[in-house]
Length: 136
Image (cartoon, rainbow, N blue to C red; front, side, top):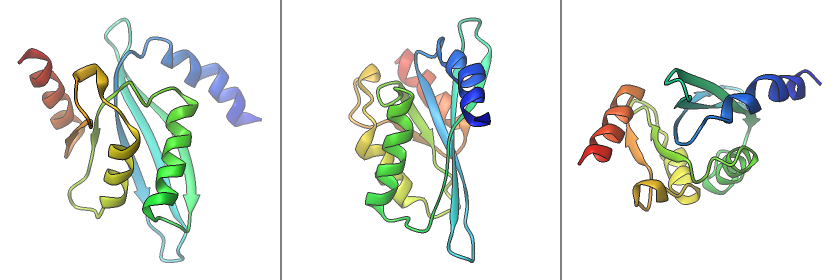
C-alpha cells in the first residue's frame, strides 16, 4: 500500500518531465547469500533541476546474467525507460560484469544513435560523456 502511494504521489509525477536519463545502481552483497539491488534514475526536469528517483529495489539469491536481466528488464519496462537511458554508472571497484551485460542487452540508446548506452565510473563522468557526445 505505501509503495503504491509513493509511486502514484512521487515517482510517476517525477517522470512526466523525463525525456532522457542516466541510471546507477547500488548493490549490497550479503554473506548470507541474499543480495539487495537498488536502481536510481537521474535526469533533469523541465526546470533544469536535477532529479534522482529510486525506481527499483529487489533482493535475490540468483545473480546470474539471465536472472538479473529479467529483474532489470521488468523494472525498466514498468517505467518505460528502455529507450530513454543514455548512460549508466559502473563502479569499477566492484565486480559488476553481470549488471553491465544486463544493461547492454536490454537497453537501447537510439536517441544517441548508439547500440548500447555510454558507461562511466561515476555520475559526473557519465554526464561529461553525454555532454561531449551531444556537442561533437
